[in-house]
Structure formats: structure tokens, C-alpha cells
Length: 301
Image (cartoon, rainbow, N blue to C red; front, top):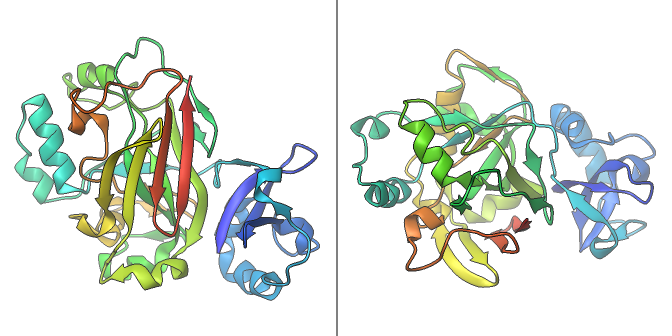
């Protein structure tokens, strides 16, 4: 299932699924048997997915994708945790700022809390924050938690994953660099926007890409139509199971919580350096694409 949120012809946000390049309003198509918002669908997906199975494939109704406006597939996640799970990113970024990889990184998967109220979607504009001159994208994949759990073990984490989406963890590198020297953060360097989308793809859709606890998914980033970043999720050091185990230690995870992978190797301008691409400027368009999930596009203003 490809689940998302869109604006209907009344300007209302509605949950919908995408099938054969058409989008279907969950609530309207099911005569109210499915909810009108994605968070409710995720919370009770064990009840709603069988009802959706009965509706899909009938070919009736729906809208062409170019007839609707998509927004973030999950506009209101309860929380966003973003990890730093790719070793290549750690090594490359460390070289750029003159720091080695901390030994502790190899001992525990580390994350920070991002702003869950600053979620943006496909084709939404991203405003460069005040006082930022080093604006960066980050090419990531994220999983969405599907059921409540605490002290979840890595080998049982699969049962808690609802699906996956693309994540662009926008970064104001100059603000981030200054504040993290104090020993806290990232805060203002990260809290202005996180793009997700264009869909949340349920985990069954990715089974053909599975490689043990990882997936063979190509990941690319373009700026103004030029490919700058290429990577693959199969190269992640920490699995989502390990990330979820860390996040859930002594803490309850809830349906709709977003867990980001962190940047794939060479998946941001910080790693690539000024010889490859300058920092992002207003007017630039960033496209992130991941196999089987889709393409997430945003324009900087």
C-alpha cells in the first residue's frame, strides 16, 4: 500500500492511497469504513488494512495524481527521531570538519529529536531560515512505527514497523556548527523543516528488495536536475531494528513515530564539498528518490 495525504476539491486534508497513478480518498471510497487521516489509519492498521484489501483494484473513482495536491503523508507524527546510521557519512562529514569518528558511535546508534511540528511534503516550498547561508539537504530513508511498544528488542522490531518513506533532514550547517560547539544540539540548525513523502509505503511492498535486515534500495539526490548523491540503503551500519531497540529503551514508542536513518554516504553537500556543489540558495530544487518509495521534491525559497 502507498498511503499519503492530499487536499480534496474542498481544500480538506484527506488520507488516500495511490494505485496505478490514481489516488483514492480512503474515507469517501470506503463510505466511512476507513479513516480520513493517516495517523488514525496507522494506529488501527490491523483493522483497516483488511478493509482496504477489499477495496483496492476495483478501478472505480479516484483522481489522477496531477489533479490533486499532495502534502506530507503523515502531517502530524507524534515524534521524529533521526539517527546517524551510515558509517560512510560519519567518516566523510568528520573529514570535512576535521574530526575523527568518535569510538562511541560504534557502540550505540545515536539520534536526536527533530521538530515534529515542522513537517513538509512533496512539492512544498522550504524557506531558508534566518541567518543561514550554508543550507544543506540530507538524503535519508525513514520508518514509521505502527504499534505501541516499550523496551523493544532488535529481533522483534519488524513487528512494530508500519512502513517506510523518504526523509530530507534539511540542515542549516552554519547554525548547526556554532551551536554544537557548546555541547548541545542540533537545534536551530535542524528545527525549521523536515520533508517526508511522497508516500508511506507499507513494508510488504519492499519484500522483494530485502537483504536480511536491510534493503537493496538505490538512493539518489538531485539539485536543479543534476545528480549529486548516489547511495544504497543496504550499506547502512545500524539496522532499523537496532535503531528501534535504542529508541525504545525505557521509553514507549507510539504509532506514527518517525525513525530516520540518517544520511546515506555522500548524501549531503557537507560531505561533497564546495568543489562539487555550493550551498543551497533560494530558487534551487532538490529531488530525493528511493527505489520503490518514490521521489520527494522541494524548492528552496
